[in-house]
Length: 66
Image 1: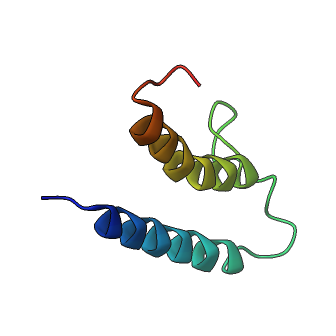
Image 2: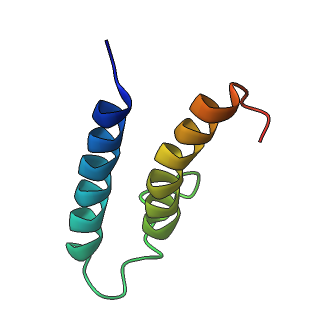
């Protein structure tokens, strides 16, 4: 069974990975887009950092309507 401690541990690991990825981005590359329709590097980091939070809110509220 997936417990609260397991969930928190996976959130911590995910945050650690995102922080590591953010430190590997060369200076001046936050605005880089592989193609015009794709997210920039900054937008991708923002999305990755928000995803765990939205999952936690869903688990607490039981709804994706936030």
